[in-house]
Length: 54
Picture 1: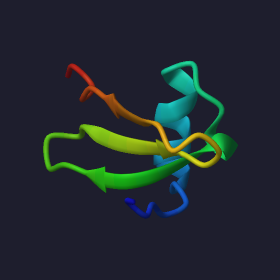
Picture 2: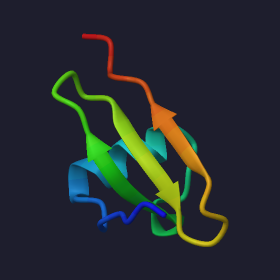
Picture 3: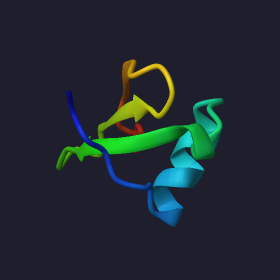
C-alpha cells in the first residue's frame, strides 16, 4: 500500500481546481512537470492530476 503526505497549500489549491476536496486526499508524488499523484484517505484509490497547461 502506498503512503501519502498531507498536501501543501499550493497542492490544496490544485486539488480544489480539479473539483476535489483537499481534506480527503494525500499526495503520493509530485512529478517535475507538475503532475500530482494522489491517494484517497478512505478508499485507497489513486488518481492522477495532469500538469497545468502554461
